[in-house]
Length: 412
Image 1 (spheres, rainbow, N blue to C red):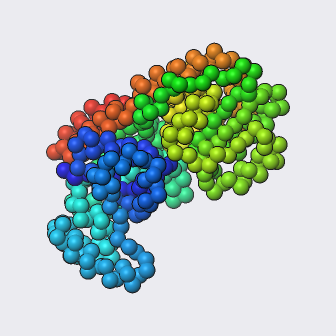
Image 2: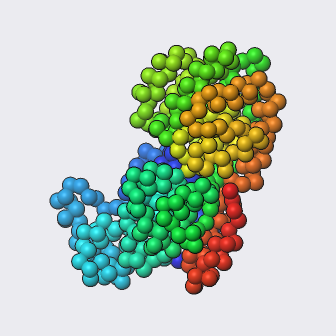
Image 3: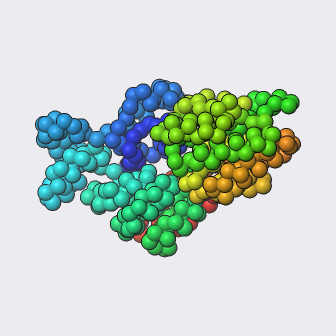
């Protein structure tokens, strides 16, 4: 049965988890495609392994052109004929209801004739909750944090149709499942808790450099320069560390619209020399930054689970983070790092100062973090869990679905 993963754009450097999942499902034998609105050739350079897998790129399909309108109008008959050839039954459902415009917008998916469609973000499912029924497909929607933590709060009830129409739901962790129920999701809704996963062989701390004696604490942050990542609190924590007389430097990997505001905060707080912005980096360079760091700082105010935090633990880095979203499920407080209240720069600074004074504690937490990543966040376990999820949705009858979903190990 054909599986289609629906995303806004593919591939994206900030969404390597979807690239890894896609490749893993292909290796497991799934007939899987990615449907997206945009696919930039420049983004593929961040994933050099795809060059040896031409089948991967061939399985990425984009929407038909929408602009200019005259071009879309000219292509409309071609899209209809293409869909009729590839999926006559699905195409007829659109035509019978007079949904010609919708057929054109969905043509890249209609032509695939999927058995299962998986909206990788809940907000996408909310925009097109009737797509699965039009295609006579099973529907799954993932909730990764931003959707429930922002869209769901700004537009109450926006996911009501998703709760009704999805055959199953996927959440990164227990916190998001609890939030979904607060926003109206029935407690009995079939769902699976499957956290992000990483390639623990790639994120391997075997060549980690020991911190130079007497040197500053080398702090790293990784993530988009967006409000939800809480970088202003990380920068303020650096000011508190300086006031305590603790030597530390913070290197920030990521790009985004808040760069100017954060650069001004750095200037205003007088920490220009100790806070550096590195821009976006490919995974290989992120790994190098983690090898050279002593601790990962993740000060988010809103978070789904935190891929960078998993990568840091796999790299043997202790983590100091906020309690936003699923971070308290990701990090074992007091064992692989410290979890502090969100928006509390002073608490972040106190834990960083503790780690700065105690190299042995950093080493023990780093070792525990590596062990946690190996036990809970490996790609093979994640792909196995998704395999069970899809088979459960395809199982005949609700009982078969529940039994298959119940067999998914609780990764969190």
